Length: 187
Image (cartoon, rainbow, N blue to C red; front, top):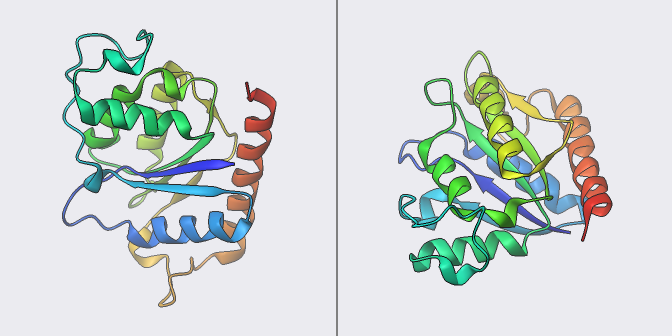
């Protein structure tokens, strides 16, 4: 399965690298996935300014921005997604919302797993907002979602979660659900 893992933070001082690297390693170890990792800081996508709603576009040629067109085409190649988001002011970062809004139809009927990180709530409020956005985009959400509360202190020196058994088991459930949903809704 072609799995796109998206890190939804672009801040210079972002802190979620341990979460992202651990999730990428788990998907890689699983062996069922061809991973396309997207770091939104490196994507350099312009702020959404297309003349038409990407959810109504009939072809990629309707994009005026070559970067937006390339992004939509990249999303189109994926068969499923994991979105990893921090929580900024009780929601998702603007760079993530921009990337989601820009792609349009390529999101429709593809499974998504949501993973959040943060302080006390582990980014769960941002994840809840992301779930609402995913519905509007036509993404099919995995029932299992993960949160990493107090993430700065929840990994050991080897980059493993302190509650390794819990996170391994629930990450496996999430990956299994993505595969199941992709097989069920594949065109």
